Length: 152
Image (cartoon, rainbow, N blue to C red; front, side):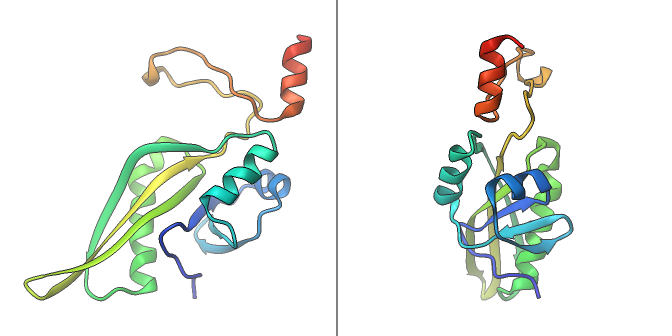
């Protein structure tokens, strides 16, 4: 049975570097995605910043809806649909931002929403041409800053 997902749950793509450096405890969820245990987005953000990385928040919210009663399997399927919708954004984490159950004409339905998040683990990453074509480097740790300052 997959772990319980609620608003605030963070899913992280299984990448050994992230888990190793941050010391994240996670539970397998679906495919190559895991649920981060015992950390909300603020605590995870602090841990990521302590490692010298950033935790980017993608502004666009992804939503999917399903009919029927609320259940763990239906939420898992909804999150799979969200991951398919946003996979072109090249992110490595997802934050569940809403699970709202309602009724219309006595028919139950639920809307699940999430935001893409990204932990850049590369030495440098360059903005894609679709973002104006400018190249922008971001830090990925204190070691990178030292190398960049020394010009090595």
